[in-house]
Image (cartoon, rainbow, N blue to C red; front, side, top):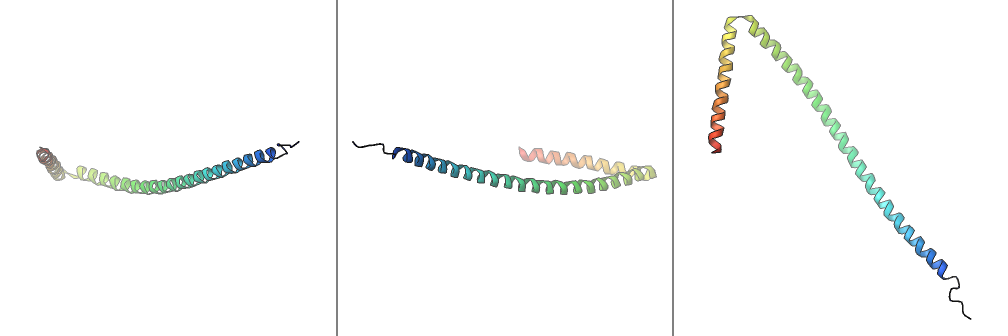
Length: 111
């Protein structure tokens, strides 16, 4: 009598399972590698954003100093006398007129 299952089915099944495990392990390794690359790209992006925000912080600090100095000079000019107040009124009036002229030009150019 011939033994058809002479032990050949067990090693075949084990080989198939081992091959499937190896394939799945390779897929998992490639996915982990992809996740690692994505996380490194995210890290680089976050570091770039932090550098950009630090630069903006220093820009805002310098702008704050500039505006603080401007407000101080404006206050001194307003407190110094009547002649400067008259000049300030002319400057404000001219800015308002310039705004309305620009508004008029821009609304006419759209139509």
